[in-house]
Image (cartoon, rainbow, N blue to C red; front, side, top):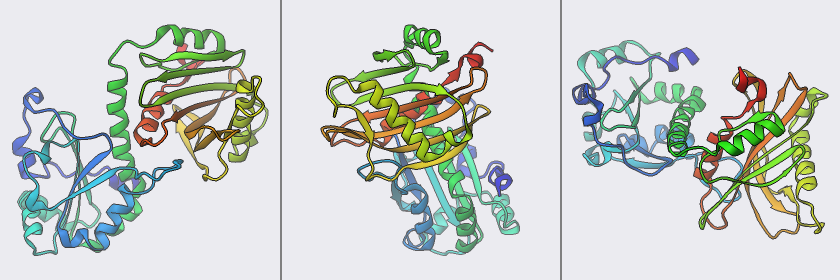
Length: 355
């Protein structure tokens, strides 16, 4: 199924092929909010089992938040209402199957070339096509299709994470472009490399809030949100350090030592009432564990959401924990966490950075 996700019908949409310009600069800029997806499909299918599967992908809860937010803001549009304004949206998803006979179905059929329709009818393995800059610059478009709803549901269910990840990666790429448009904080980067033998691309405006001999807290505050990066480490002694409970114990211990000060209740702890989500992944050829959850001060005066990564610098025999956390009471936090995730993914050990 992983290979099938990469199959793309050449020139899938007739209107897409005719609208693609050799000079992309002539296209308008894509519009819309971060994390928003415009979905175009027949209204009957949207109300049925196929629509349920689409909602399960894009409206799934974003992990680690105290207040629920979806992974994406999914906006349904009837094919008859898909106009010239909506087609310039940053993220577009078209969903179609060939067994319907509604007005919405026929509108979507007209998007396909005759050859593409024949290919779809003949091959039950293909189900997805992806295009960039179809109607606008900076746009990501996905087409999900099959002969009938049951076949398409089967493909979507088997590849749910890949479909969602495609747009997550697109959003991160946009954040990366915006974050590093201005000059980075090279002084902080150099200090982190010099004092702690690691590197992160620090966006403009961040400042060092506090530093010890084995930790650094980097912060950007404005009138809307308090964005934070935290780097700490210890000697790596056993593989059990990657277990979720041990990661959280390391996190809580590091924050307690870092922020305790004179007030025995002023340090940060992991909020036990919010489940911890954890996954294993490969980050630039390093085994990594990602954790997401909520934090609070021990005295319950503040709280928010965090995500963190744990991996080993084998050259130094060191276990690093890097975290992004946000304080933004009463406001949405999903996009801020995506921004912090984008920054954290630039992390490199000293060896990696110098190679």
